[in-house]
Length: 327
Ligand code: NAD
Ligand code: LMR
Picture 1 (cartoon, rainbow, N blue to C red):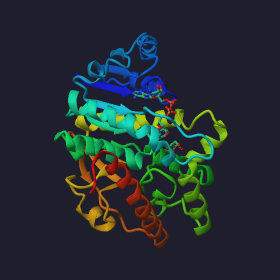
Picture 2: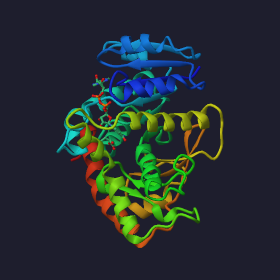
Picture 3: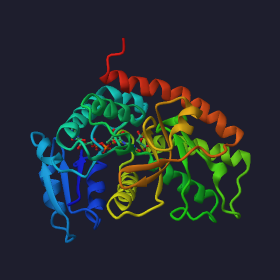
């Protein structure tokens, strides 16, 4: 039994993400939870002839949706409009994510929780603090989904260096998921026929950091990235299921996690001084198998990580203090 729950399943991300997950033969039960229209989306998806069962759950059925969940994916909450930062979403999304995390603590305390709702830099600490309070916290099982930054990195690089095959090569992205906290490690590209000038690195890094804004601007008030995010969310969910259900070894994804208590995280705790950070993580049967130490960074990347750390400190403190009273 592998039950995957999508919370916010009727939304711009939730619907295409659920469609992609319906195609996975690793999932036996896809449970769709939303405060609106979940039964309708579930009825529609349930006609697809893959083997998983699909159920829809409205706002009074969170317990039923989460019960026996193996994995919970959370794209619930409001998206940005032009002129907004991800942090501006905190006042609405913090309580949505807190309530869903409380549900997970109560009804599926051992589930993997994949947080898509923004601001990820703060919503992941909210989830972790809720689970700590409920005494069911396992840092190996909570993930901030930053895969869209990884997907964008390889797409944008391919656009200027066609020799780089975007779907076959992964670029590590560290830090967090907003503007300057997104640090793509372009120095780590090993493909011999792909080289970048310092000017190209600067322009590409900026485009990756602000890729979300490109979509927000183009959608002109109608929301932010949904389809590319659904693709990225399905990719991360599938990687985690491949590692945890199928036992595939050596699967690595960049993701934002709680460092303390996670295997292998000591080096990045020492390097960043932070409680949460995105970096490459090897996935395994229990979620995080190993947090991979930051590789040797270029001078520019070192400077960018320093800026990211400064911003992340505030984002993390904001999330933590939403749950914990700090004297
Ligand atoms: P959307 O408004 O289209 O959909 C959100 C859905 O959440 C809606 O269906 C809504 O009914 C539902 N919802 C609201 N409150 C809920 C609750 N308490 N429980 C369950 N469902 C609830 O928004 P979207 O475009 O799908 O974006 C969702 C979130 O994902 C936003 O916060 C956005 O910023 C974020 N996002 C993150 C990334 C990333 O890379 N991590 C990328 C894109 C978007
Ligand atoms: C993204 O990177 O596309 C998302 O975080 C949505 C946004 O607000 O930009």
